[in-house]
Image 1 (cartoon, rainbow over the protein chains, first blue to last red):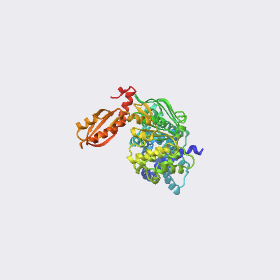
Image 2 (spheres, chains in turn purple, red):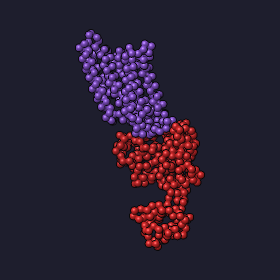
Image 3 (spheres, rainbow over the protein chains, first blue to last red):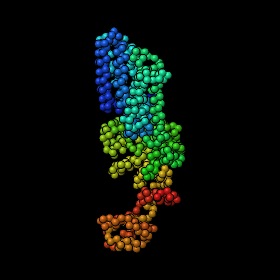
Image 4 (cartoon, chains in turn green, yellow):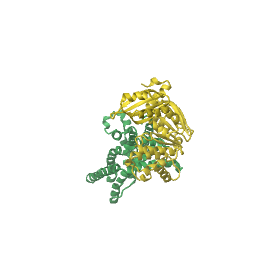
Length: 252
Length: 317
């Protein structure tokens, strides 16, 4: 059994090393934390000043994490852009594809490594609620739901980024397309008035924001969980088809 | 050990490999010889399972590549044409990664040390791959190919881009490996096959146009019985003397260098015997002889020759 997962673990370790031994992740993390810290400060300040008797703790999370998602969207392409594009550029895909690793294992290792980066970066934001908890304890179950939502949302966006990275050998192209795709996914139902009535139902079903928002209120709905899992599965499937295309396309 | 049956690969409308079949027996070193674009790399990529053939099949040690790619890939060590390595990994770290991914059982460090030792990399173990010279990077490429002790080694242009000293090293390395594995290597350099391989498949435009032992190939390349003569002196006199030497059939002036050295191609029925007569004639004439040697065919000439013999001469301009 150990023998069977050892190649996979080796690839996962290599991917993790690739991220954490290079400066990119630290710059991305620094910018992310600086911006999310700023949002935390300004949101908290606004609630304290104009709270109007709302439950500060409950509503603060909704505002804060929607703002944090905005930062997440800007950094996701930077983390996922190189996942396949760089291997293609270096030519190391040929090495990878001629090892006994399955295509699925390659996708899974790369996906998990990206997720590890975000677990570290986004996980650091737990500091903000911890600070508030020390001043005013609150029910932390809704917070757990927010972080579950974030994990699923980031998983979906990362899988989109990995798929787009598998289509090109130029990292910047992968990054730009990922940024566009991820932002559109988040903002699809942004302006509900601009969407024809009969399409609105479909658009809100497809929009990541509409599925993330309940988590912010502490509501975990299987429908929303399934939406994110479905995106990850679809993108994983597409990435594997893209990996397979080497077989019939010829050339790298 | 390697069976290729009617392998064909199309890139769109372009047929890169056209109905290629061959077998490599265990322990053999076989060379794929052909000019650039003749399909060598494509054949190797099909053998390693990187590309699927448009039609045909191949198997490694009796395991069909399409049927059980994972098991087949375990048996193969592959050095791609463009040796691609992760530049920010250390030699040691990279080899350990490859060993684990390829499913080396037992102690990975042992396998890494051994591969580094065989390829002369021990002193570079901790060096970053991106900072190695090209020759050392090529060695890392070979080390990663042999680390899991594969039964089949597929080396795509193993000496390309190396300096002469490194080429000698890599060639002797390949010969050492032949005891451990079956080797298929590709090259577009004619002398390379005669130094390293036991048997040669000659490719042109995606087809195997000839298959020969190295002895046979050497005979072929020397087969025209031409002698190269480099001598300095007055051209008409030299030509007259050479033409009147016994056994000489035809003389062609190849080059007149600025230093007054004349290069001649002398065709004769009995190459070896004529050479001694030629030397004597030239020395007696008082000219200074720079070189008299059997004139080997270049790869291009060999191709023309093979194609002409096969009655396919019209394929080439």
